[in-house]
Length: 114
Image (cartoon, rainbow, N blue to C red; front, side):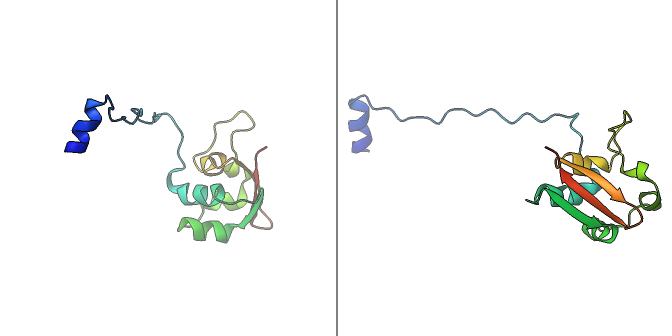
């Protein structure tokens, strides 16, 4: 205690860390939902282009893609044509990617947005 008394007598006061504001969390922010694991995978890839087969996507997710994903390009719509983005499209949009499916090859090219 003698050292603290000596410091206070000299006018030295302990420095306090600046107060930090809590991070702002928006309730309206879209989330990837059940496609969160796909989002995380795409977000964490360094490559500008990631090509995944439908089977690889299903392995990442842990469940089968709906039948529409295999036969309709509209299922992969990210809302770029004025429509509402699909729930699944938030997985790649939040990762900063676009999706270009090739239904006959059963794969999807996820390119990083510039």
